[in-house]
Amino acid sequence: MRRCLVDFKDHGRRDLIGVLAPPLRAALLTAMAMRPELGPVVPIVPAPSSPRSRRERGDVPTHLLVRAALADLDVLTGRSCVWTPVLRHARRVGDQARLSRTERARNTDHAFLLARPLARPQVSVGRDVLVVDDVVTTGATVRECVRVLREAGARPVAVVALAATPAARRP
Image (cartoon, rainbow, N blue to C red; front, side, top):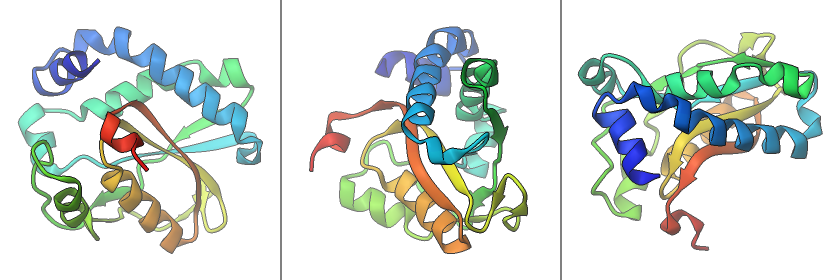
């Protein structure tokens, strides 16, 4: 999984989306089944990608992956999944690949903010949302996403990821 994700994200292997999207779709289906409070319209909030990463890669691989995983999910669940990229970087964040748990937490602390107010019906004050990222390593990125959404009044009820590192599962 690690090699496939690295090739997809960092080496431009967009052909791997067909391999990666189905397990992410399964994780989304599981989260939606376990969280009926999400209701008939499920806002999907992706973790943001840094401007530097977007420039270097020419796209946002995680967003491409999540959008592919969402294809036809409404047919499978009877719920509408609404792509809602409301988060963006507030400041520059260093590459986290070689950082420790503590360094990652410091690196992402207050690194995100709302790209737009939570005034859209899909993501508004009091609204339940799903946060999606490709990999959870220490949880620093998704914790920061959840913090920003909560401070804005949304209710993140689950975090969905394609993969997690063993370190992310330690108590």
